[in-house]
Length: 111
Length: 112
Image 1 (tube, helix red, strand yellow):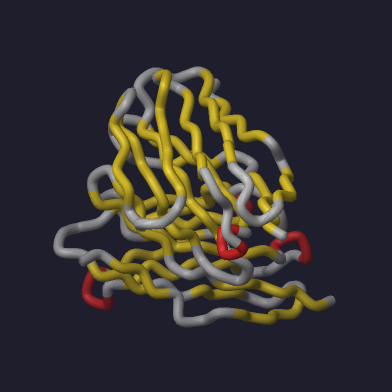
Image 2: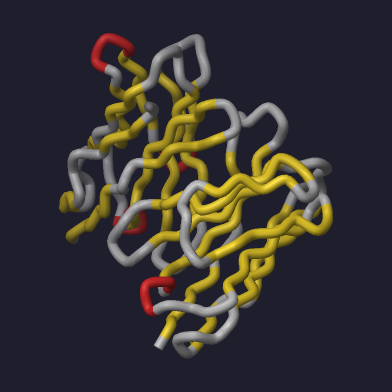
């Protein structure tokens, strides 16, 4: 069965510091992978997605993610975090007509 | 451009009362539609998805039901709400290529 694991429930970083959010997936074939961000009380917004090709994908708001097949990972990174990046982040994998989400990582940014 | 609407935005209901949440999509045809529930501090739980009018797949057996009376309308219902039904309900749609899901703004449901 397909599954997505986000091992970090909560992460705190200082503004200006680098960020990496971890995501591991379990899937039989090459998956479609996604990162979404959710601000409090809002819906989810797509940050970036990977289908094929270059394993380093660029997204909105300065985020990027790297697909590593050997590690079954799709970690999200940002070189310098801004206070407005504080939110909940979800990794997801697509299997046909269904999308499977991780439990999310809550990001706190301290000044 | 495509947009997705959900209403109401917030709802407070007593235990045992009925529920109807509505989701509509504009700017696309034959979307795949989804209902998720997000409990406090938890991830997204897929409740129902639909690939067409009248076609509903249930992921989690519970006292909720879904219907799709029109191509771009998706309704989540309950005859009698439970305390455990409280949460944040998100509607989403995806195109036939499933290369992205687009989410609505959500409905915050509190059952007292």
